[in-house]
Length: 281
Length: 293
Image (cartoon, rainbow over all chains, first blue to last red; front, side, top):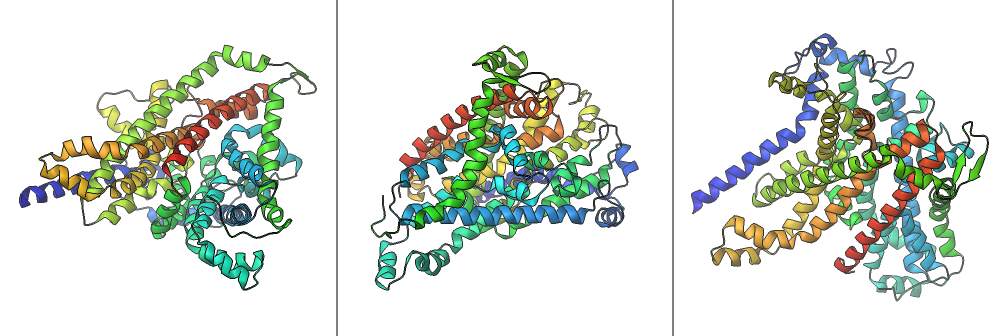
């Protein structure tokens, strides 16, 4: 019985390891390719072993004189991505915690309809209102600005639901005690609700960071100047149709562009899983 | 459920709701209304004037063979990705749930693709499968298989299905693992004492117990393949060759932004909105029943 169990555990490990090798393979292969010379790649002789050009390639990617796309260094693009991601993350968290607080802790005539309106945004993902949203942003002079890249992505029903659900689980006694102490709604929000929400905010941060960093369709529409592009937009612009794509650099930039969200997920795994499972329910 | 303890203030809640509602009006509701309005309009070739044409755009869409093809592409793409992801994620989650040591190690590696942008996933797979220089296309070539996603529509479709599934497996894995961990051990032990084999136990006990998760994931995967895969299609196939990998969302983009056919693009948007509304209501009907506050 015992050996049978050991055998099946070992088998589970072996199959899991095979599964992981398959899942990680595209990322590993990008790493291998980013250490080759372009000639090796174009000759189709790339093996699964790293080549000798790792340092040179990454020096070229990160250098401020040689740019990954015409005239724009990777630092500028990483900076743009970071600003946009932080605006989306902070903006979404702020407006959704505020509206959830209003909905849970107050009774007011338009409460039901406000909640319904927020719910309705779930049915309007950016992909189904591409052209008019773009026109709206253009009318507001939002093209090629950080506001344009972030504000239209900020309203979020799922984050509001997450906070609403969490506020519902806070015991009523806390609010009653605060009121007996003479605290008004603002005091209670800043002194009690915000500190209690720390874990929910941390969980949401991870989800929103990935969401913001990985945006593609919207930045593609809203930016015309390459200097306002995000790192992911720039990466796809490096690929040329005429066979002159610098694949050794493209693969390096792919890894650089995926590193921040992957690091956030791996390092904050506990919060990420909590945030994902809570916010999607 | 409602809170017993609430504050009385007339202005405060509106002040706190204002930012979210303002952004929702400017970038969600107004554009959506505009899309509905535009879907009944037809512009002349120079975009100088437009006239109200009732349902003409809608009728034209369904006469357009490319739109019908986009519906089929969307269905094949969504169902394939969903089935692949559900199956492999459950398989890996069931194994990870069995073992004691190293669970976090496996979980960490399996969730990595989730953090990778769809557009980057597209680039990675495009490269692996690009004819003559890609590693996997060379293997196929050596096996005597003429692989070329830029010429063969079926190959292109397989390419986007693989890229999209690769990214989504992590998501399903995490939900399945959480769901499997919440199954009471006593239930499985009882079945084990009754002599049920591990496979029997899995089929008769585990699969029915996790069916709510499967339903939830089915809906989330559909939404993902419909709306979040634009970056994958854009970077791998550009919807081609021909219209073989153009799904409904990609066609809204092509008709609205590239071909500047606003009326048609808007009508397609409205059809998609109706679809999302339907799936959102279905999802929440179900979740409301399952989640107890």
